[in-house]
Length: 401
Image 1 (cartoon, rainbow, N blue to C red):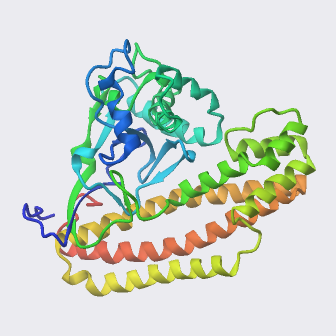
Image 2: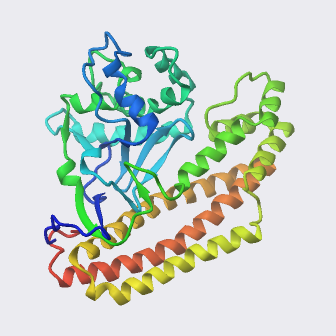
Image 3: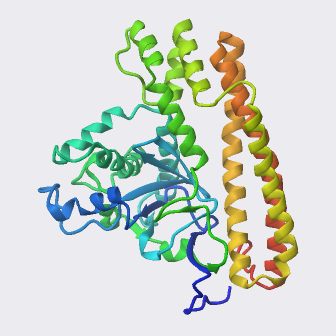
């Protein structure tokens, strides 16, 4: 790929994108948003000595951490949504200094196996209770806002996943005491940012930024937020209280397990009602059908535009769209594998329990899987067009760019 010009027009975007083909399970992504209040608060914690006695000196450089579970997908912990997936489709950073990719050193015994296992275990956290992680807040001054405390779960997710995989990243610090910035000083990790990040200059702005405001809500993040709202709803809490459960579980899956075990009609009705209130229904509304149609139409139009403009694209623009198409296909493959597995599971549970909540979840996941199958077909076609052009130009030299 040609070198990006140092003098970039103000009408173009200078972006730094993650290369999904270079990422490996277990890789750790660190980010910071310089203008975000919570991000600034987290990075400033050590500078105002709120973590005195923990061996952390100076200013923390990063405010968020995520762990790679597949080439195009990470898992992260967010205070507003819990533990959820972070797919790097249409995602970039404005400043390379705001992102860092770390990888377990190859000389660590069984490094490859441990890193892969850490990625798998991190994904499992999406289905576990993590409420007891709140003791992490004990290391902070009591006056700090809960929102800041919640954001710190991200680095705990990463270090806890590695510890469960059999490797403690820090001998002197427990997982719940590790901040995102401290991960940069871990002697067991290499900085592979240069290998995994590419610079692009393009007229096209990404939908999501790793180091700034996003133009939309990520699908998995919105789902997680909605499910957290169902968990905390009054009807669900009341039904659980009747069953002798004082606190709701941390995830919707754990709530479903309680429902399977108890077959409680009130809990079933409460969960179904909560999902309905968040817009999740057995039959899509007219607006949802129209929105889905618009999304697919936009993808089709984008494919037609790229097919037409591809031969005249600059190398940077071509690489931008090729990277995005590759990342999107990887993300959809991972998502579809999970969706179809859930569809099969919900179908089996529905047959055994006859509970309407599982009928609703079956309809939701099957509908989403079918939609994503169509979206994937269009993205694969887009990738093939772009890949052929890049290959024609001699840009494809290692089997994937």
